[in-house]
Length: 499
Ligand code: NAD
Image (tube, rainbow, N blue to C red; front, side, top):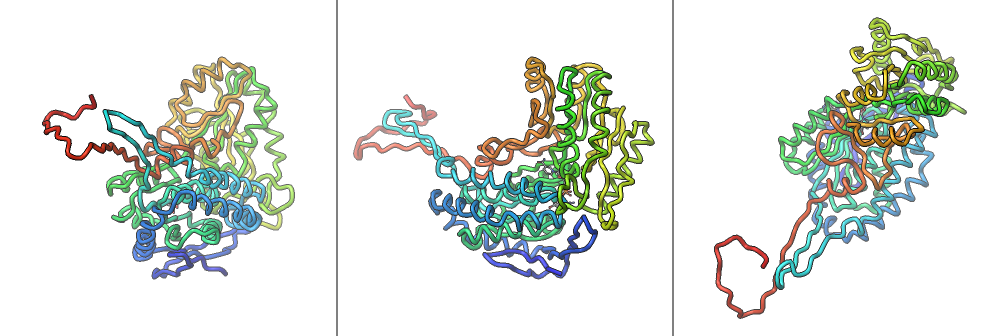
């Protein structure tokens, strides 16, 4: 069985901890790897090399850093199949879905290729007589990224390429459940020309995370994961003087108006509710049907589509949905379904009984649909993070908007309608960070920014796009004047003004 090491100072490193985490294939339930779990000394070693690499790397012209990004992008593409297989093997999603995970990450690398332009500053001549002012953006320093299991390519690629393109050095701590893909990406970045020490990776769990959050030489932390951990990361890292962006969990609602094309809306709910077995932070987990006729039509159209989903191992032919990530995740989802039934929701399609022949130890389940879900139920309140869709019946459009706005999460939402007026009103009033109009999974492209509101994001700045560049840089404003030598102006104790 392979053992996954850390990557420190341009090479694999075993570190000094003897703790290891087990990595499973969710389709078979078999252990496929073990990953070293870093201790404080291992994190310290990674930070020390990242700090040492910083002066030279931050002084490297952005154009040269961009050339490495161009090569990195090509190398990810050349190794796409191998990376996708690693993802499927440890996460469970289908190979095609894994390729989507890689492509959405690669798009951020492509964005980072434009770093010379993105880092251009501003200059104003003569802000006062003979006085010029300019602003520049400089790297923050040593940055760290802590990532979740559900996008082992895209989310690490949201972080380290843009951070190092901005001139920072980086330490990645990926999820301990599927670390092979992130480790290979870091290796490929070095093959592309990233100098040693500029990107490092430690495998690990809470012990490694806490060492990162409290390390005096780490200047900024990016995090993506569940809300309780995001809040902990935000407060602990901020208390230790770091810049933090911590993206958390979600409960994404899709509002379906009575005038929507019901077939299109049902297909959208299937893609967004069951893709990646519902384990996307932008998965739709609540369908809000406006009016009983809409609800009835949706249930009628969704039921056969859910029953006909092609479920199986992610590397199988024509498979649409793989297993969920761990046995514990599967048990938790089943117990939430039990509770939904007890709370009085109508269980229209029950995925608990699904069995995959030949894969009896895999973490499979069928798609599940609940109707008549209400706000007080745990299936509504909790992020299930599995292939379970809850349908809430709302009386009218205003009720639907209020429901979305009352929810504690604010990651993504969508409205399906033919009415431009309603769509515009929804986009304007909804208290959510990412909104789709007839688009069920409105993940912004790399040159826009990704981030939620409310308890889906702690911190101010979103990922990638210009917000990402701002997060990974600090602005400096310089005011300069070159008076003729020998001219005497005297001194003044009043506030300097440019007159
Ligand atoms: P998680 O919070 O369990 O783990 C995320 C990271 O935090 C991992 O690297 C893990 O090792 C670390 N971690 C876990 N518990 C910790 C603790 N107590 N102290 C310190 N570090 C800890 O999340 P997950 O299960 O890997 O991922 C699923 C979650 O991520 C879902 O809630 C999903 O909504 C969320 N997510 C959010 C976004 C977004 O953009 N908002 C994107 C993807 C996933």
